[in-house]
Amino acid sequence: MPIKIQRLERYLTGLKVDLLERGTEPKFPITSLPEFNHKIWGFKEQTLTIIAARTSQGKSAFSLQLAYDLAKGGVPTYFISLEMPTHALLERLFCNTQGVDNELLQRGEFALNESYIAKWEAFEKDIKDLPLLITDGIGKTFYEVNTIVSSLDPTPKAVFVDYIQNIKTVGGQTREIINEYLRQFRELAIRKNFIGVLCSQINRGTKDNSGHEPKIWQLKETGNLEEGSDVCILLHWNWWYTHDDLEKHKYKVIVAKNRNGRTGVHTLFFTPQHYQFREYDVFAPQEVEEVKELFDGKVEPF
Image 1 (cartoon, one colour):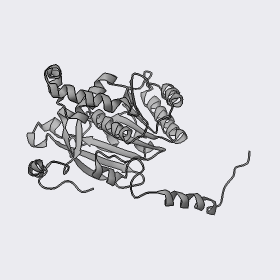
Image 2 (cartoon, rainbow, N blue to C red):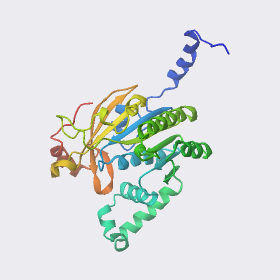
Image 3 (cartoon, rainbow, N blue to C red):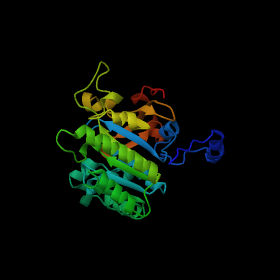
Image 4 (cartoon, rainbow, N blue to C red):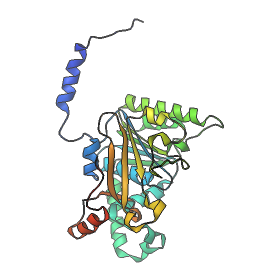
């Protein structure tokens, strides 16, 4: 079969149509984090985003908030958990969306607090018609991912996998299997025209002169996560190491790679008991001064 090579002018019409159709807002925005959304210009179809962090640094909470955000905007979203059971993720979503303290839930406050019951009823109503599917245990092989994504109706426009180091591997072939899973997942995102998001661990033991802040080369098990991604987001919660109260809510989102946009550091306000991330300046008036003091009146440039 002969190879067909087209002249460049053949591509111009389609490119012009694409440029004309681009709006002044991202097609798939992150509405809960408007400043961060503006900087990375939302999510995009047929792309692969890596969200990476060390253990207990919030990658599941962060990715779950993004998945909920997309679903809330009417985007059919599939969240594949390879680590946590679905009911645990729903509990996190309840805390995130209703501002409920998970520590109090653990201590049995739900049955004793009428406001929690009211919030639960609001949460049930919210979840009922939300185009969000969460599964656990399914997806440890790419065959399972391909089968379920291909069978869903409607086909998801966003697929999250949390996290890739938990896929099924065979002794001695971990790197090779993860690389192949990554390659096939990216191809599926292109073929099925969806937003692909893979969560990843950062190697625990690796750190340099900058301390615990993650670097893109520290992605666990494979360098292909860096090479095969369109966007790579690294998460860092320094409080985990210092337990300094002044750092408890300060959360760094490091865009280490962005194939079609800017890279840089964005600082968010993290409320761990709610598993919730907010822009540092999106607060009620009485909170503003406290937040300014927390961030020394500034955040890192993007």
